[in-house]
Amino acid sequence: MTGTTLPTTEDLRTRARDSLAALGVTVPEGDDFSARSPITGDDLFGLRAATAADTEETIAATREAFLTWRTTPAPRRGELVRRLGELLRDHKGELADLITIEAGKIRSEALGEVQEMIDICDFAVGLSRQLYGRTIASERPGHRLAETWHPLGVVGVISAFNFPAAVWSWNTAVALACGDTVIWKPSELTPLISLACDRLLTQAAEDVGAPRDVHRLLLGDRTTGEKLVDDPRIALISATGSTRMGREVGPRVAARFGRSLLELGGNNAAVVAPSADLDLAVQGIVFAAAGTAGQRCTTLRRLIVHRDIADTLIARLTAAYRKLPIGDPFDETTLVGPLISTTALDTMQDALTRAQAEGGKILAGGNRRLADAAPRAGYAEPVLVRVDAQTDVVREETFAPILYVQTYDTLEEAIALHNDVPQGLSSSIFTRDQQEAELFLSAEGSDCGIANVNIGTSGAEIGGAFGGEKETGGGRESGSDAWRAYMRSATNTINYSSRLALAQNVSFL
Ligand code: UN1
Image 1 (cartoon, rainbow, N blue to C red):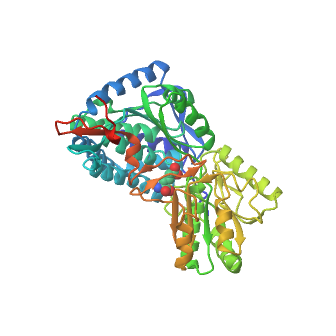
Image 2: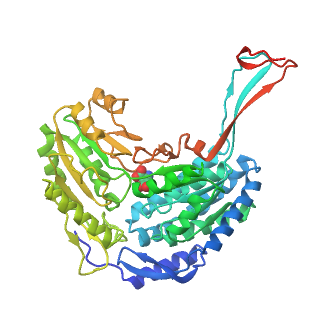
Image 3: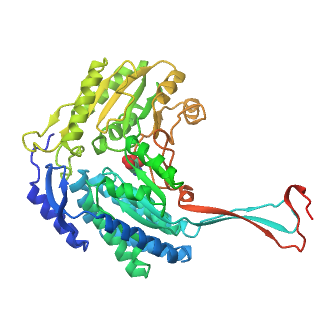
C-alpha cells in the first residue's frame, strides 16, 4: 500500500540528465540556484540564473522579433505551433520524466500534462485560421464597419510549479498563433522542464524558419519576474500563482496601463445532492481532492454534502482515503506523490492544527509519510476533515490535499455556502436531478469560472476557457475565445461611397 522504496537522488539526477540529453538541452550550469526533486527533497544540479543584462537583452530581442512575427500570416504562424506539437509528441516520455522528477507528479498525470500541451498545440494550429473578426452593419449608406484583430506584442508568461509545462503551453501556443512573441519566467522549482520546452520550441522555430527570438526563457527569481511586470515593452503579463502574487502583479501592470491575465488561487467545492450516483461521486471526489497531492489550482478543497447521504458518503470516502497508495511517483501503483517541499508539508500541518482549533475533526489521513526514507521530502496522507462551519481556514486555499466536508439541508443553502469564499475558480455538483443541476449552472448558482455536473472540479479539457472570478483573478486562458486576450482589436469604418455622412446625423460644413 505504501511504497517505502524511493529512487535515490543519484538515480533521479541520472534520469534527469538522460532525458535532458535526449531532448538536446544544454543545461546552464552555475551556482545561482538549484534544480531539485521533491521525490527526495535533494538538489540535482546548480544552475545559472538570468542577470539583469540578460533580461534586458531578452526583452529587446523578443520585441524585435515581434516586429517580424506580427506580419507573418497567421496560418504560417500556426506551422510553428504544429511543429512544436510534433516535437512534444516525439518526446512525450522524456518530458513526463522531467515533470515527475521536478514536480513529483505520478506517471499518468505527468503524461497527461504533456498531452495537455499537445492538445493546446492542435487547438492553436486550428485557431491560426480562425482569428475571426465581425463585420457590423453600419448606420450609414455606403459604409461598412469591421472588427479586426491584430497581434498585441511581447507576452510575459509567469508560471507555477504545479503545472510547470501545460500552463506555459496554453499561453505560448495561443500567443504565438496570435502573432505575439513570448518571454517565459517559470517557477524556480521547475527549471529543467522549462529548459526542455524552450529547447523544443527553439528547434521548432529553426525547423520552420521562424525568428529565433519568438520565444525566450528567463530562469530566475522574483526580481526577474518583477522586471517583466514593470517593463512597458511587455504588452501582456499572464501570471499563474497565488492570490498574494496576483495582488502584487495586477496593480503594478495596471499602473503602466499594461494588460494582465491572472490565474490565481481556487477554493473549489463540490455539492453532493441526495440523488447523486455515489460510485461516480466517490471516484470524482477522490481524484479531484487527492490527485496531484492536492496541488492543482482546481483541486477539490470543500465538499458540501446533503445531510441524508452524509454518513454513507463519508464512510465510503474514508475507506477510499485509507487505501490511497502514497510514495514514489515513478511507481505505477502510486496515486499520491510528494508535496513540493517540506515547507508545503508544514503549511498543511498548520492548516490542520488550525482546522481542529476551529472545531474540525479529522476523519482519515493527515499523517506524514516516508519521513525516515526521505527526511527532506514532504509525503503526506490526503486528509478528510469534518467541519460544521466555513471557518477562516476553510475559506483559505491551502495548497495540499485537505478536503473539508460539511453538510447542507437545502440546495439554496448549499449554493450560498459554495459561493461564500473569496475565490471563484472551479465547482461541481453531483446530482441526477436536472432541476438541481441547471440551478447550479445558472446565474444564481455557482459563481465560478468553471462549473461542472457529475464530474469533479479538476482536470479541465483545453477546449474550454480556463480561469475564475473574484480572488482567482478574472483571467481566461486556453480554449474557447481566450485568444482575444492575446490580441488587440481595431474597429474599422470604411466609406465606399463618395459622400461624407457623419454618424448620429451630425451636420458640419
Ligand atoms: C493549474 O492547476 O494551475 O483543470 C492548472 C485542470 C488542469 C489545469 C490545472 N487541466 O486541473
